[in-house]
Amino acid sequence: MAKKSNKTRILYIITKSVWAGASKYVYDLATNLPQTSLPAGKAGFRPMVAAGETGPLAQKLKKAGVPYFEIKGFQRNVNIFKDILAFFEILSILYKTKPNIVHVSSAKAGGIAGVAIAIYKILNTKYLIQSIFTIHGWTFNEVRPIWQIALIKFFSKITCLFYDKIICVSEYDYQSAIKNKIAPAKKMIAIHNGIKPEEYDFRERTEKEFTVGTIGEAVKNKGHEYLREAEKKFPDIKFNIISDIPDAARYLKNFDIFVLPSLKEGLPYVLLEAGLAEIPMIATNVGGIPEIIENEKTGLLINPANPDEIADAIKKLIEDKKFTQNIAQNAKQKILKEFSFEKMLDRTLAAYDEKASAGNNANS
Image 1 (cartoon, one colour):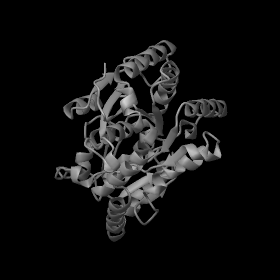
Image 2 (image 1 turned 90 degrees about the horizontal axis):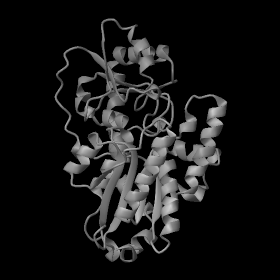
Image 3 (image 1 turned 135 degrees about the vertical axis):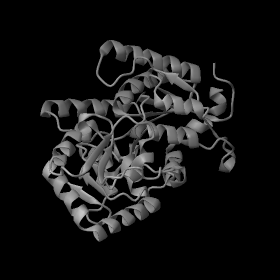
Image 4 (image 1 turned 60 degrees about the horizontal axis):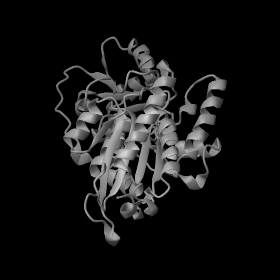
């Protein structure tokens, strides 16, 4: 049973407790919400997080003192029995925590949690609860068969019906949703991911060789295979793909060039981090990446699934050192100016509807 409190109880839900872009998003919000009184006499927030398993995200949250609930049924792949289990687990967590706001991230969590929230609202009409869904890149923008794309769009529309507001982490995702009529424009808002420079303690360089690298989960959408193909053209250069090291961003100074060969993205934190570390960047022209990288000004944009373009871009950065230095400096300045965590937090707090906060006493 949740303790009585005037604070706005907010429950974040995400599919997996890994340490990746969406989980960093949840962690940053949950650990930076105002805890004390806000302007206009509003109370602060009491954050809680629920996710699959007890991986790096869970460990970081527990260390920060944020209550964590494991959803054992959550997994990336579709499994009807696990999904049903996850639904009932989420419903149980809602009853335990009685949140004023439920903020869900990632497509898989969005669908299952959306149904659980809807049922909870029906069974508890006296409680005021607001539901928010953040999409970190629409799945229908992936390269898939036409019938799969149509099916994903259909379920994306259904998922969005369960939420009061939809946050898109890039203008690309926002416009993509409008174009495909995924949800009404009045329901959606684009809020860029943001970072806190003071929280980054980049390790001193230990790598002696010239190194081209990337950081990202070992999944198809990250396009690592195309970077490996490009690597064959540079036998004298070291390539390093980091996919399973906690807080991998600390090691960015070991890269002379950072490459993000993704096939699909939302608005990747890793580019914000590489830019902050002043590492020259090459990235594919997909998702919200062009909102960070302006071609030949803050980095180099290339087409996805194209090893030859990756190789050509690497060669350009190696050969033109002055150009390489300029784009790295420009990227850092742009990130400091346009992608601050404070801006992201302020806009997200504005998206948390007042009616949810007003329900504190009723839900206590």
